[in-house]
Image: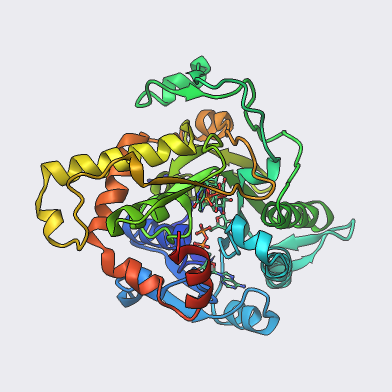
Length: 405
Ligand code: NAD
Ligand code: DAU
């Protein structure tokens, strides 16, 4: 742990009541005794204080309910706390919602990010150099959490996946990962041109670009990480994996868009949190890193594997059946229902994380079969959480889009 530069640091974690932000809060409090976290979250439909209920009892964390777009509020936080790192998770994050209502995506994801940076720049500046560039207090950094979707969509070149051959340098580090596969010739690297295709990914790309522009224009200290599809505990059940688990447990149909052959690269959320921590505490400002799971799979296979895993758990541990109202003793693929495709549905994402693996020694430690089982067991054990987050004041939207599926 010695090589980490975060002892005694204060983090402003935006979006810390959402899926990845909350997992990051848990990861950091567990890993470091001597840090402070200030969580700023608007508690939209996707944010739930119950997710960090236990952590909020800890004296190392304080919570502020509010909007990252609110200048005065963010300034107050910087006045009250000597913030060392901003970790910006706060965003509107769901592609389908961005297709229905793009505007809030532009407001939060672009203007909110710019507002945070502007306040951080003002509070961290201690003078100017001879060329007029700001000089910043030592060690301050803005970490922006971005997505592989900024790179656009890759072609799917193979219907049957081929073996993914890792470079020798990556293979030496990622020794725990075996039997990897890919559906295409190309992967996203940090130098792949940005080419977003949905309102969500366009808003994330714009936020990346405004962050990079602060880096150029004001020498503002930032890092960006771009990760693939996360999965794990506390994932809001509008996204594919938690929606499928929730529906199976309720005996409902499993909606698969189009032919189910779109490919995503799945990353266990705690592996992602570890990567963010490493970048914040080990890396110089102005660097960008991809974080991926070495786990490309077609949606339909993800759905089938989830059904198979739940069926196996039910056979091995009948105790679960007693707490469920649905009889899951004979679940099978009949639950799958093909529904209308997403508009502009990106065909394939595949992250090449070579840079973070070779430079920082990070790699996605959790194989998918292990991660999906942990995730399913978490949902089985935490059905009250699912009930809690799906009955908020956004219930109308939730009902309209998801209830009948
Ligand atoms: P999420 O939707 O689960 O959580 C977002 C959180 O941000 C919620 O707690 C919400 O209340 C809060 N929030 C929204 N608008 C806000 C505002 N204006 N001010 C303050 N708080 C606000 O999202 P997530 O899946 O945890 O994603 C976190 C970040 O990671 C996002 O920036 C997302 O773009 C990025 N990302 C997510 C994934 C993924 O697979 N989930 C993959 C790549 C990148
Ligand atoms: O790639 C990273 C991105 O992953 C993040 O930037 C986003 O914030 C996050 O929401 C996620 O976006 P996706 O659109 O890839 O995730 P989602 O879970 O919505 O969908 C995954 C795939 O499953 C996608 O191809 C669409 C499909 N799908 C999704 C839902 C909700 C279905 O087939 N049926 C569904 O009901």
